[in-house]
Image (cartoon, rainbow, N blue to C red):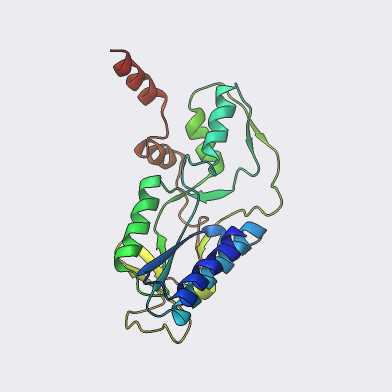
Length: 239
């Protein structure tokens, strides 16, 4: 209801009441790309509702961003891994070879600001971010603790690799600064002279997977390996 009917309600309100709204930005997810579950399908519909709304309400700019799980957010696996580690394990993995994009909250916010600043009507902004296996994420968080890993099997509607740009979309994708941009396929909105086809294949978390050492460095850079940092900050607070 939120993703589909909520998006349509926003469009209807602007169109029917002629509200002077400058920009509407839809926040989407990699699950909307080649969706295999209901959540992803509703996000895919939301994207299409907003993109097509540029035709219905040409005075308002409708744009989208699409990104993966934000590290350490409520929907991320990291809080679960931390809880399991704090309880002495085991850490449960559905599939050790499963990969996910690594995106910090700051990167997600930067993506939104970049789209607000530079996107043309109907465009979808995609971040260029590294990916890692969930097994390496788990090992990075476990460190040298005596914690076992248990493989529990994939769940329904769960992808082995997430995708941010599909094979169909890559033919309409350009590079703009630090981001990929999916151009609108509606002929009414196809106004760019920029070179398309920046990607030769889908943009998947299964490409360019970070090694264990690289995953550790990435998590440290995002302040997600917090053992030493937490001890230091606690000592500073006590002082």
